[in-house]
Image (cartoon, rainbow, N blue to C red; front, top):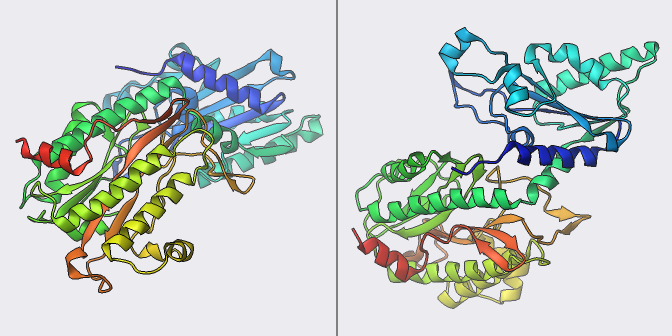
Length: 441
């Protein structure tokens, strides 16, 4: 099983410390435990940026990075975490404890989380800059503000609090946007597992099946490989495929309808994101095939545009032009293609963007613009490419034979010096490949 090593996490902390500069401190907390209902919690999942720096997956933890007078002197990495507690471990599982934080997670110093309020003031004193992820957790924001006020109160003793508070996400998001070789391989594993799940779904579906039963086929593959869904799975049969974030998944899959599945897993906290659309009975109708071919043509051209130096928006621009031309050719739209694109009247059938950053979060961090302009693709960036067409079931501006057809095709693509690398290529997507696969029982 591939996993990142402590050397990987240390290298990230090294880069962060260098970006911070001397006389600085960074404070980063993991996610709080989320309640599902009454006294039942959701399964804990560490905050992505916290884990990115620490590899520490337990709740109730805070990491501190302090740089010295000269950046050449290095930095100190402290981890505040839960102490070992035999009784609590009987109920909730083993903990690393402060000793484990040092021995297993390479912290220079470790403290019980209960000591955070007491120890943090000394660490803040005489630092020039505080790097903090403002706006992530309201309650924790209030604690940080209180610490700064207390540190300012030490001025009468000749000490001082940081004069600058800088948004830490500005640095971390940019670091996370550019994936290392190891990160890409983790995403490849997640993508391959997700592709296997979609393949299973294509072979398992049949008329009369419930959407949630088809979702269970996906979850089986995820679970068998030690993964969990990256996001709430969408399994939309028929007109439900026209609802972009449909997650009820509680309707019957009908003969003659398409089913749109937008579902994928995360592996070692790295996400994948796949959408496939295919016929419940294994055979596309003429109208379904015609629309599908338009979407596939747009997607393939958009993927090819995910290249170093191209604008982030280039795949969307290309996809929109192909989709609009296809709608014109099929008679679903009329008019001049340039006017349709400029007015964005195509939003009647295609109302979302063509992709988003992908990484530890399925909608991953990283700015899409720099200095007001769309940024250009650089090696190591990962993005989804997901054009679609959605003909609403009640859209009386088009012939009835088109209504209720929703199609989206989505793959995960990494920018490389050799062109786009499609991580999710292991699941078929041409009409011929889909029908051939579904014919195999």
